[in-house]
Length: 211
Image (cartoon, rainbow, N blue to C red; front, side, top):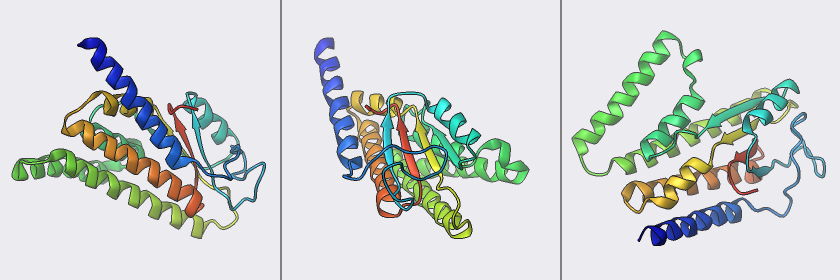
């Protein structure tokens, strides 16, 4: 029974990886230049998505040394829909930059979500899916503001590190939370593709996905 379960997990993990690869495949995908925000084989207006197996922190340091705007989002603790939502929240609103009022507001927001779960008492995972999508929408709006206020500047680089953690959890769980994790990963892949290919707002590197 254990071997059957592991085989199913591996098959589902491969399926999720192939879905990510298919969603993010684009005929004009080339190597991302970490220093300039442009591509070696294309115009500066063409944004890119790249998948690598590891090295997220090293990529972050290299881009920062080159003066490139970098947003580093770690999914290392994304073992459930709630944790994946909190990982994205802490990456977009790091505690070191919140201050007293920001920390209080973030704490109240987290407690409000938990209270919302208690009041409804039905599908907490769905609430996390909705909030996850809202955070991604806020991030896209921030990227638009950055583009409009810094004309001619290097395009931001978004590093989504440790993607293998939610991929593994989504592949191994068959309950409602596993379903929610798969939906959130699909949303993340679609958001990355649209943000890069359709809107050219940022280059995205998925670290931990199959290269």
